[in-house]
Image (tube, rainbow over all chains, first blue to last red; front, side, top):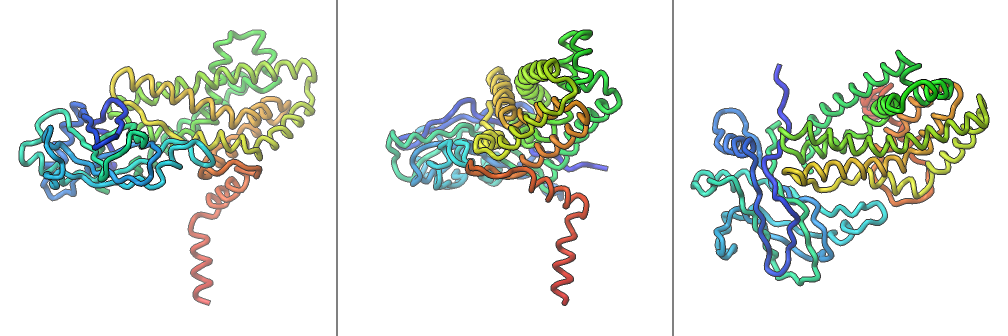
Length: 165
Length: 250
């Protein structure tokens, strides 16, 4: 009898990421096991349905609801992210961010969490040998320039593998 | 948070099993384990070292509180590397247990004082039951419950991860103590029926955590959910569907 496997953390950044101005980037460091599993998940082309890999933007807090953040995986350093749509993992709208960041009523102030499916993006990066390090660079770029008062902070950026059910 | 219902159910079964084992130990060895039963309390305090009381209180905590910790443990599992999961959960448990051990010291001291003042009387337990009922309906209780639903972002690597987990355990323990102190004190002060009271209090604490966070206000909480949960367990989830289907046929 085989039991279905559990979701697994593959990597995480190490400190809170503040998003201001034209954006920010962070480095998601993979554990040794995490890197092995990521490669196995992304290269598994056998008949079995493969795991999905997700990017988690955890506990985003801030005061600016009207922001949309584009998330890119491993864009070349210094490059304009708009020139690399293939590296875009997705976009998240921060509607309700202000209320979710305040400790009042039923809210505990822990903010918003978003999950993006990055299986295809990471798979393509692996195919083109652009994913050869233990670290994945994640760039978060607002669609419109943010003011410093926006105070948007991502508490944790992590990558998780979830087995197909 | 990534939520996988099957994974959650498996974790819940494991935690419930641990709780059940603790209940069985308490039931089989009432003298050494039911540290809070007033009859044994005085004798134990005279004869046994403090460590024994901490151990017995810990056993009671595992039995009563473990089922309420499933969401927090699930959050820790999903936020930690596989190799660190046991260590992470252990650190959380140490922080959580430390707060409850400290609270247990206060509760046992009160129980001892009450026993000295009114031995074998239901009056103190009755008075605390009234306070517990008011607390159960108070907005402050809802604030504590809301905070037990929130989970902080955890560092994944090194000492920062260890510290985050210990801190999360302490915070969770504090809000949990704030939420449950009155009913725990009530069950401790009962001269008889201590075990049954512990079971009832555990069921209430588990069921009130099933409710989602709410805006704090004066209202009864936990009892309705407990009845619905009991109904679901006794009659099964299909009963409502079957009656709906038969009504539709008519």
